[in-house]
Length: 267
Image 1: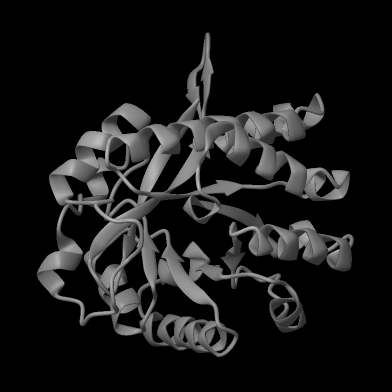
Image 2: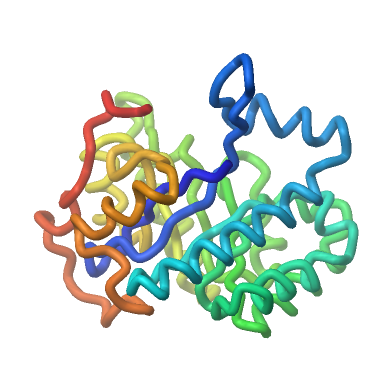
């Protein structure tokens, strides 16, 4: 099954997107997270079929939301194995065509390590996706595998700053701030937006705002939730009311904390 975690557009204080996260409802062990379920999918060579299923589910669901007047950009996670098949672009475009969802309402996320085997082949596929209007995001940037060369070469529109930087240890705020500021500036110079992931406290959110992150995501803002819950959650906060974020406006602290939940609600 899929759960969706809302994403905050920091400059406007509006929720205009979400990340689709795979969950496995095990008949005996209950709801399993990706760390437990994806290795099983990989063992039985199910990662590519699973991604195709996610693409169909996400695009169909997002199109249904559009008909209800809820306009969201949804991110999905890709695996290196899908890049190596050479079918990624066709799989994405097929899901979009079958659902009728505009390409601009989909983001394909991948880690830098997933393109390491054949960077040129991966870059060609990502460039083709962007030419069709699908955005591409680099996940876990700054986790220890980040390559400045790949950042320059890969056609991406969003850098997701790894939670290890956002969730700084006590006494390391200045160091984390310097690293995040560098990533934001580097991305901006390359025409790339930034997303602070793993935001779990008001202090971490304030730092992301202060340093100019475009987006923020984490349990302090919202937990991942089933599709049915997301509609009411967004409606209560005025999220997804328009297709694109408006002009970049000074962020008001009241707007940015609207709808945040406490770290104790990490269900």
